[in-house]
Image (cartoon, rainbow, N blue to C red; front, side, top):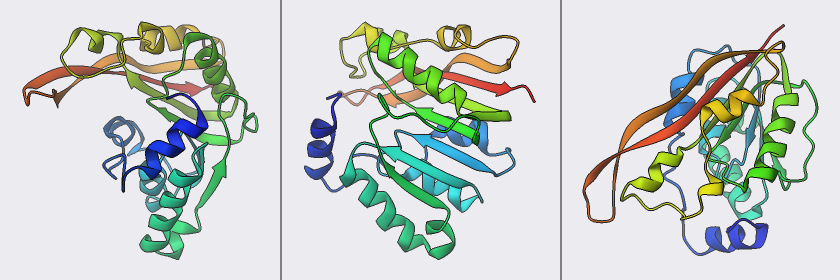
Length: 207
């Protein structure tokens, strides 16, 4: 499920893959930021990009599924020209795509789970895309989720901690504002409430 064809087939197989709501950690960390330019890396069906655009951000929403991008663009049109005009829907494979350096006031990657080597390379490229004074926000499933009854791929290499991501950033260039495993409730397949944790890394590039 890591390649473009598999994800596009997944999107085509159902009316919607995701809830349509923005990711909660994006809302928690970006709600108070001054709108500017944003990169939504792995935008999927566009809920995060739509939320950002509605708040005044100019968003580049990047994903390798043309079906997901089309759904996001269609929903943007429903929300009106003001929102739709603030989003550029970019078809690209993030494992190879080179974002413009220093172009974005916010770079957000929500639940990008790749094997360790390509993930670290991707996060390094995303960091270079952050403008001076801008924010890097990376959120994922914490490795401890593998010990719960909530379904996760049994592939530990796909998971990472905030400390791991923070350690990859040059301390002379970055201030680490948040690096934690943030708890939230979820339901497992049996309907039980389970505490899971999101890896949350928020860093600011020094001006």
